[in-house]
Image 1: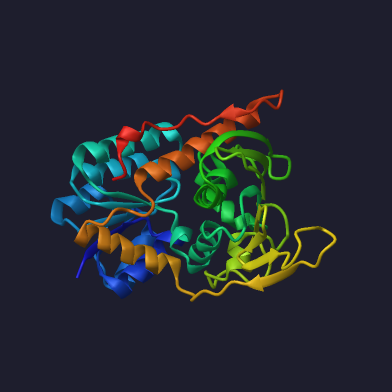
Image 2: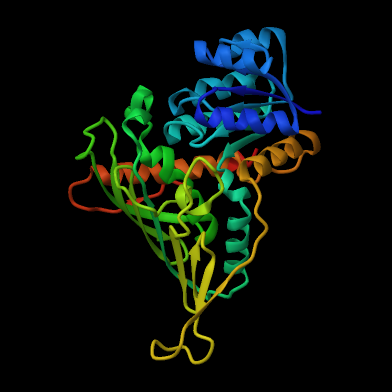
Length: 351
């Protein structure tokens, strides 16, 4: 079986550890905290305080990096230099410049890099993508994404979540940006505003964004982690049992022939004449539920064992960060100017 080491035993790290123990060999847990040491002992798994300590005694077939965003560059670099394929939790790094360093080094060393945009592995997303590509919506005109939920105060007991490189833009919105690109194509420019009015942290708690896509479609995004509300992927998809499911939607994709709400998967269209005066009906798209984190791990194992191309490569993660960096830059402008996306050098490849 494939040997996987997990770096970081926090909230998402423990989810990865749980799935790895089901589908592969957990070669170790790397995390300097006492809590992680106790956790590893409870699981009867080797514990290491640092990547260097681990590489001194072992070498997994692959590594999952689930540490704070600000540490992704140094952690990814250590494994790439050691020739170990990596799955890095989103975002790939805390800014596009650091992400580019990861992609460039991985390309130079010919080491696969996957980015943990696990929603791409979701059956919900695959069904939505298939409906869009089939032409049932016609030409895509507009898209809206919403991330409204309420994070409790103790979520911010980990200081890195209040510091630059974190905040709902980098922690949460990057998932939405990845899926909007997947559904609608590349984003070429953005406008944005953000606010810190509620928590007054170093990072934002609320943002509003306008997106322009290469194909001419326009999009709007509204995010906040200070609102008691049911409209976010976490609360609507039902893919993670720690979040209460609300049976609502958080994305709407609109086209000239129909519109799709996601993840309630309702496709709306006029069955007869195309007119606002004519009946409009919805049909619920079918799909077979599956755990996207598990599906992502199985894909990672396939990349390691069989050399398949990553579904979400390091370059894909870098493009997502380029969009986020543009959003942050636009939010700093006082004249509402749009910011063009600085597209990464495609010669970096898709390792």
